[in-house]
Image 1 (cartoon, rainbow, N blue to C red):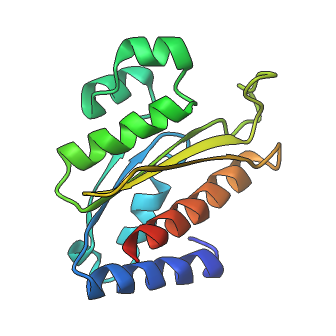
Image 2: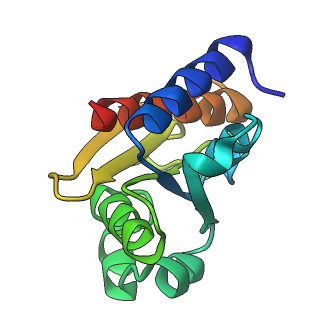
Image 3: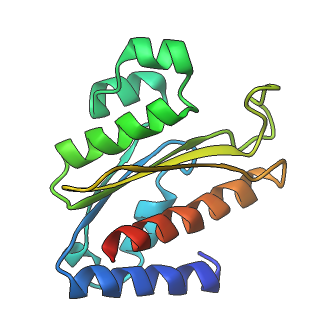
Length: 163
């Protein structure tokens, strides 16, 4: 289901989470739950994966993760503030030590000059640490490719928070 390189990275992240007795939760928009699906592909994932939130619509981001509607109206769902609030909301609602949030424009439609197709915002938060945000411009490489590259980036960010 997942490319071997990304599956192996997930195995490594899962092992590191298990060793440190940490759990992760996800708040996903453009990836539609792929990060959660990847974790649950791994046997024993219940020890390291708490839950995943697929909040594709703005309303879901508001209702499930507590992202303020005025923030979404002012900055849009594909923005640093939205990604940050998604991660904070997931950590607050879930029972995990680390939350990762992903929101972007996978394409092929939906891009604008300010937010072109392939723009993805990531936020990763570990309890009692500063939140980390990154914005990546993957470009118009294809919808599936943007989504899979986003899964890989999210795993890398989780891994950085484990250390």
